[in-house]
Length: 321
Ligand code: BDR
Ligand code: CA
Image 1 (cartoon, rainbow, N blue to C red):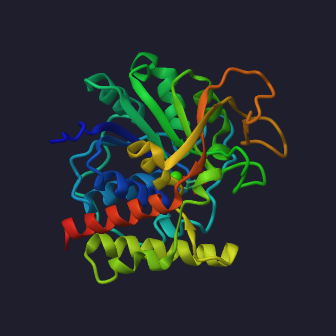
Image 2 (cartoon, rainbow, N blue to C red; image 1 turned 135 degrees about the vertical axis):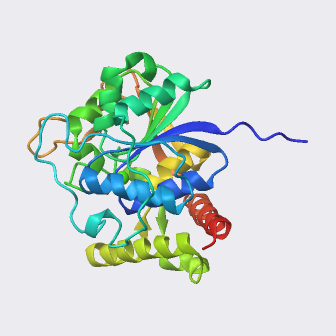
């Protein structure tokens, strides 16, 4: 008889965001993960919307029990970042209006919630970061003893060879708050970087979701978001295949072999007029600098898509409605 290992305790820091919403669904749908808290950050849209979206999403998923706290609305240093207009639509979920949750955000700050979860956990906790790294950098600065209890940070952001989607050299989450990202990579906490090299190839196509048409409330919300996300990408790229950036980070936390990583040195450009927000990844070990990050360079794209679609289909069937 094989005994399933205990679920891995996780925190999710997020800016929902359509692909964030699917990523949270994947976490909730996955028995390998024990979701101990959600914290929100401004990014894809402002903090008021990302927080409301996360609350409503957890309510949709019958998880009002998961503590949820709001964090930073703006980056640590420069205040000229802006959402990537259009990708995530009106209010961040592609115009999908979820039912209000029966609760508001926790009175604690995001940093306090993360600190409390880390202090209370008997096992080290994995922090999955799906948005700009403002809250994560604040945690590392404000509560280093708690942060030392992190097993690892798995973050969606940056790129090693595929560099940018916000500028030619910068991926959105890192571009939004490069000073925060720079501190996270330099902190000495184990980091897995799930960047554009792999997330651009972690795609779903409209037909992947056909099994959910006619499904329950989770399916209806998901399909509304996916339809908006698809229409945006058709307009922007001509392709109806959409990258599920954030869900790949969750998948890498629950099934690490879905990506192949190499330990490399990563730094973040905070100054360059053309390259601000670029992750500078020493792929060929030119600098001799000590590797500080497990960088995802390859993925099993089919396994990822099967995992995501299969888990969300099962979740919808379980929740019904
Ligand atoms: C990242 O930026 C946001 O648009 C997505 O939610 C994802 O976290 C991709 O660059
Ligand atoms: Ca995100």
